[in-house]
Image (cartoon, rainbow, N blue to C red; front, top):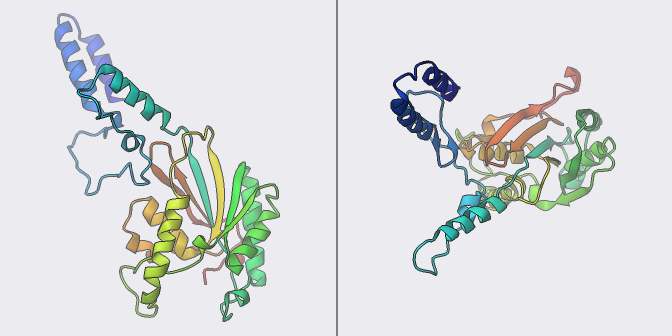
Length: 285
């Protein structure tokens, strides 16, 4: 918009000033285009407290391609080869990740086997499945944690989207990802942070990243897991302090939608969406 206004000004005031117009136009163009990155449209010289890390998933094409240093000097052909390699490794599709928290479950169970869905939890899972069907996306996979409540939720959801391939994995099991800040006194799983935290971080790296270059169309993936895992993923994906995960709250059966763009930008479309459920069906504990 700024560039268009500037060019219009130049067109209306260019008599006798052609040299100035060309020179200043080049300067302005370079100001708004640096290394292919978009700059802020305002002119206050504002500097953010924390800048976005475009290589957060270690898949930024510019970081994957290194110039050949085996030969002396850098020729124009070398630069062209690097440019072509970067282009070849640059994604063009977005990944849409829909994280589902399992339905309400029996919290009195002593083992995972006994922590099965309640009747309310089954109803929540059914409504979530219907919601996914109504959204009308071409889902590429339905992944679930191997914990009983997550598997049962995924089984019910799958009835609404029956043709979607299924996967199960231990890496998405519930746990304590990282000590929360501020801390709380009634929950002290310190011994679990070291074990669970490494696993949940590994799960984030496996499932939350930009698309592979070979992926030509946007994808929609459904992942049924747990509140702590999803909340940690949201903080990590948005490059917020991961210690903030416990400040968030998710209803049972809710949908959290994260979009990862080809550029490495990340957007949170919904956080714990459960508005498709009647109020008397929602629960959080």
